[in-house]
Picture 1 (cartoon, rainbow, N blue to C red):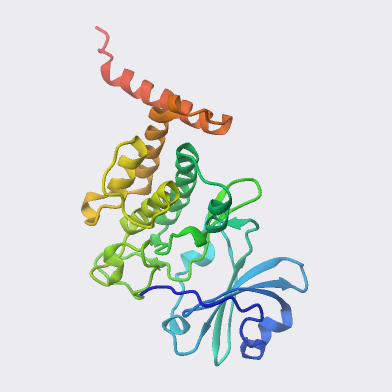
Picture 2: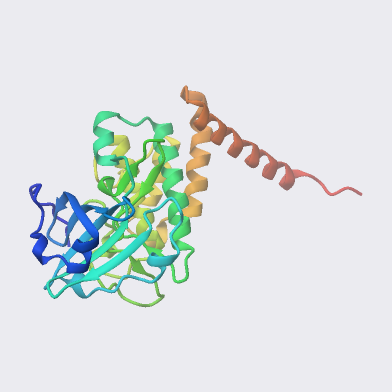
Length: 293
């Protein structure tokens, strides 16, 4: 079940095992990681100069035979790493996606502790991407939201990456792959039931709590508005969580509005929280206004 990362190997896998048409067109620049399920490489397109991330799956692993959902190849939001190509050899299957420059959240959080308003902003950005994924037909469930799979671009935007164990959701169907990252994967992802949008909501809640407290676990109690949102996100029973990422986004923005007076937040956060506050006031007025006679 757990996705374990092995010691970093700068040389990466034997390039002779890579599909020949891949190595003819792309130069392998670096090995990002070596894991039980996959090796992750950085490649350079010899023709265009574009950089791509290559996920390499060895024969004998479930991922070698796994078919990636078509929606992941055609319909991802622009901010996310787009599908580039797929190559196969007798020994290896390789999926290539755009390279997103920046640092992973795992690295950046060590250098820069996140304040509560910054955590809310990051959560809102990731919710927008989950809304897009879950709105595809069929919906795509990411299933591996964790610090290593969020890149913070040079402009500060957070981007969800790595769709290696993502699946298309179909009501009543079981998961094709029982994989995930211990601490961040929801209970149902351990094979007890099928995953759906609420599974990603659980992992997002764990991620935000990890930023808040440094622990990859569900919060036991809640005091602040943000903690109350995270407690609901990470409920063990999926029926007790938010149903959609849109609901989580709204809850985070409401929490931000309540916390605004406690923090000296920068202009970007202030404008978002103020805008949400104005929307809430308008909705409240519409509910309380009496019809004219």
